[in-house]
Image (cartoon, rainbow, N blue to C red):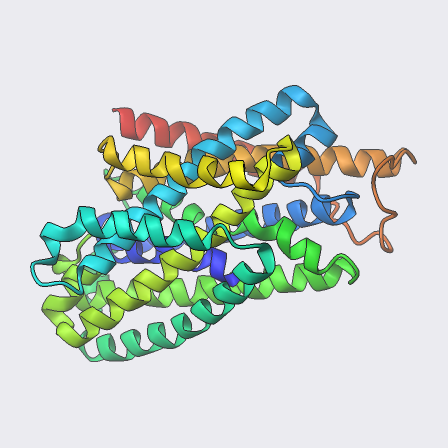
Length: 380
């Protein structure tokens, strides 16, 4: 769960803060954290109480019908392929930093990243979980190191000069980026498979701890690098760090970045392969190229502005997924209340959430408004 959350998004955070200012960066952080935690808990309940092995589109069909399933599938393709593309772009940036004149090798480095991550994505779930674990654990230590190195260079005036309480051009930029950065719902069904014989509260505890841990480290990293780099902050965070913190921190940061996006790629690819396998009956061997090839095609078509892609995928793709999640959870609770559970397990002492209708409406309106505003902001 932590390996899925802690990925590419963190390296855009310093640039995001430099564009939006401290106030809007923190406001959207709080909003995204609340929205993601609520949606993750609801999705965990839907996954936990539904019999059989499914992924997002399969759950959508069970609770909302075939038409909703196909719509959910389209939105899932959009967000997953966009996410895998982002991982490949940033993976290429981080990998190219280890070569002389790295900037001229970014395309080749991205191709190598896609190839290596694609091979690992073919492994079964247990192997991917082991790989993800051993690659994720060092990330938190590396982040602590980078923050420690950056700390002496942090200038408080950098934060004060960029408070930005106004609705300037960058005020909404953090929303989609934070949603993308903190989202890890793709692996909840796989985590549920592990916790299928445990109480629901154990599954929720894993989700809560993973999200809070990753949110804390992401926020600290974003603020520390921004505070040290300020006007030298670059879109991938590391270019500005090299100018301020030196080559050693730059190379370690590149290693952190590579590991972060690599673990996220293989975890997300595994879930997407599961969608094809469990929800559409596609064989494992055919599902694999359907997952790993389209992002490469998008890359060669020139879709390479990862900041815009990241914000767009976060606000629109993951936002639409949030709408389906709320509707599924409502349908699940209604079926339980009506005494017609069907293919649902019996609730464990009523542990499922019962959020107020007003809260659901607020979250629904919020994520829909965020998605629409993100579309308008990019198009205009």
